[in-house]
Image 1 (spheres, one colour):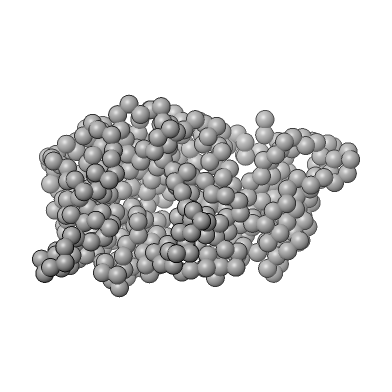
Image 2 (image 1 turned 90 degrees about the vertical axis):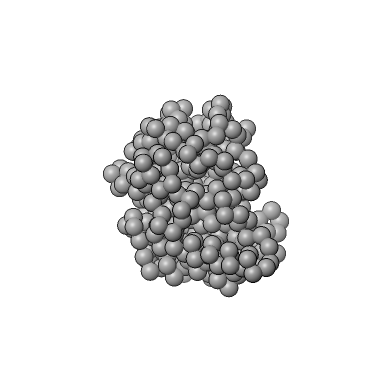
Length: 421
């Protein structure tokens, strides 16, 4: 997944300062003026990199809405740009469908510098504050209804930092979401979470990272357990967890020596090198999670060319490494074997379970048959949706997967062997 971060402060020519942006309204919202806006260019860039889902920040911490809102006056309707008739969410969704990418929407309601909202709430405890809180909650519900009902089927809705449920004094967004987007991923509030944060913004999780989780909500409750030991539970999951809530690993593309979720001037040097992006891929997608990469359209409304180039290089490298396995097999047995023609050099193995039937494998071993007999390549626990193991070159005639413990019959839908130069 890719998430495109766009907001008013992209246009102020200054470096993004999250703590300040959360509490400081933009002095003139008409600085928003992307004269060359081209969401086709955004989506083509991620399509070339192999991304399947794209998310747009419909609102972020300024509270400014990037669409034609009837309930939030602080939106594109207020601008001189496109005579107040622009709708970037609409453009974005249409570009996604044009290029065969599934669209998603990010809704930031936890902070709103324009309305003075911090951590979901207005400041104060008197009747005035209570009335403002009720107004803000109803406005948020109205925005969610607009965004869920106007743009067709969505792949994911992302409430960053969550969305307090009404039992916690927040807006009641879940019924609205469920009314309009019954097949969509919901992330997340104190009532429901379909995925969980992977515990860092490095785009990686440790191994193992189980897709199952012990609580029905990712981290809005049980925080004394969830936040312990550097978010260990969020990162690793729980093999005995009752809820399927796989982790997602998020990071900005411009995160090399920086951490830029939004475009900032003169920051091309923070674009991750290809080597680091491949390492991120192994430790996210290859560790049974979804990778969510943050991208930064510039003040012209375009993805910067260095970023586009790096995304294309990354997609090409993933295809080069993994498009042509030496051999592959699938089966529901406790042992799967691949025989190669003569002795061949291998250095990568991909395993995938049929996740529709659950994460069943608990312990397994990978072995290669060398001239000295069977040698252990790796011993592990979690396979899940995808497990990628890279290792030093081995010359083998056969490779086998031995599943030594599973919950019920294992369902391996993919066992692939590669030699990556």
